[in-house]
Length: 531
Image 1: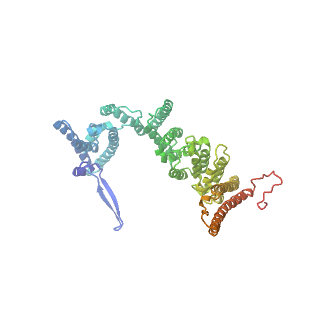
Image 2: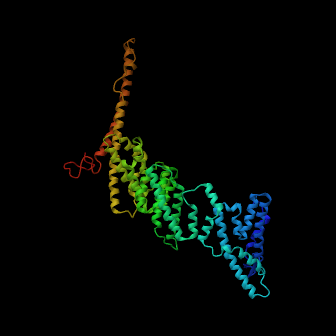
Image 3: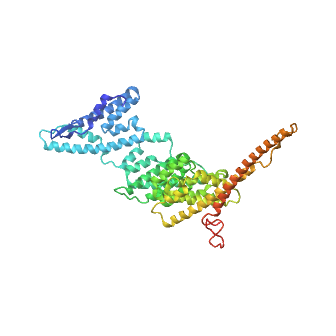
């Protein structure tokens, strides 16, 4: 820290001495290399004294300690397992997390010291002369005596030590109280399973109650960071139940589903976080996903966002992909599902909602069925003429060869009933397409008739009053030729449009199944060849 490279070399002296074996394949032997510090106990005593002296001398000399000196003294105290001095150090005592780290490290080092002390006692009794590194019995007893308060310290005692720390109490008072007890959550993990379950049960109840109360009051003062923390905590705990060594935790799944659903609704209210929405929804039960997610996906109008969510659904919820998309599109096609869209863009949103089923070819069959539902709605609308919208849907939004690909790309394991529905939809779509083509052709014919002049504009004729008989005859012949040529062009234009419209209408009337007949009609042939 802060350039203490020379001193940092001394900080590894707390490693226990021993041997490290290295296999030498070339020489076919095993080498033992000494590691650690045989003078470890003496080193710990010197480090402890250095930490105390450094902190006390600077305070007496200057009344305060610089940040660099504080950090160096803290390192000495922690390495020496001098918990009392470390917790009194200004750079550690005001931090709850650092103080907790010091206590946990101290408890672990105390256990390590006890084990090494017993090893050295056995060596002193059994080895003559004394085993190297066992000559510091006095220093060993001094170290163990100074850390006696750590012997047998349990998690509850660690929590009590932190709560009674006056420096931490003062800092918490200065910062102000926060409703969510993050420190209690961390201590629950240190204490054990029962503390974790009690914490989760209590916080879930509080969070859900606060969210409902905020909703009733119309306020947005909820601690969403706390909700996110508890959500991830419960998802983490639930993952133990599906691990290789499963741990069953009572009621944790219900609590997770309850809190996660509230967090998902929060993500829904933040369009900038929609790219996380599918991931969290996938952790909910299937019934909740099918009931909730379609209403959210209906609000996704951007093509890139829709494509991203489709990929996420395929990766995370493949089993629910088709049922979800069916519900999304059907909900979007209903007026009730699009209450957030103005009437002017309603038709465009409905047409674009078919893109949910047009991302992958195996969904084209369902897209075809939903397309027919939308076309029916357009054709039967009595309040407004939506024929142009229907033609735009077929000509510009749907892919090329859409109807044929819908039948050809049906999955082999698809139910026979669904295959029959797709085949029926195929015939129905072709009928709609022919009808709309005929409608478009007649509209073009009407426009041609409307835009084609039927009278001769005499202002363009040559004035023959000043011409003699021969000149006047020649001028009249030229005018007639021009007029006949223009009339012929107009006639051919109108005739071409009329033939096209008649051909389109003929295709409608001779469509297999017939537009002018039903199965109960008699005397009307439905065969294409009968005129």
